[in-house]
Amino acid sequence: MPTTKPTNVSVDDFLATVTDDRRRTDSQAVCALLRELTGTEPRMWGASMVGFGRQPYTTADGKSHEWFAIGFAPRKAALTLYGLTYDDSNADLLARLGPHTTGKGCLYVKRFDAVDHDVLAELITRSWELNHRP
Image (cartoon, rainbow, N blue to C red; front, top):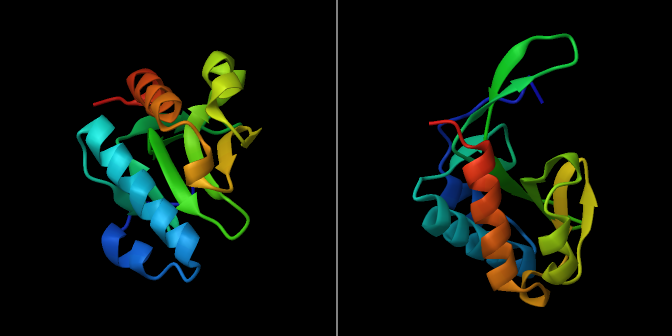
């Protein structure tokens, strides 16, 4: 992660290039939801991650880097949301979310329309308040 940096590429232009119709539509919907809930504009991080806000990130070697507070990437296998499940957090909300899987700090959603959007909004809001450092 530390080598991934913010860029000046347009997020909307990037999302328009997502070739799978469902993944593009889902990504645009998630981006709109994150804009609304965070009150901030997204920024591209590297070639394929969309980030909101910022937070310090310390690597195993003790070096500190800037990272986004929450974000997402339209991956082929699933829409990947970052910053919502750190340290096995938010289990109460994840239990009510609907079909998903998790990884270290990542939430994987195959179909945006299959998850409970109210629960997702609560998860995003909680994670934003915890992670974002103005």
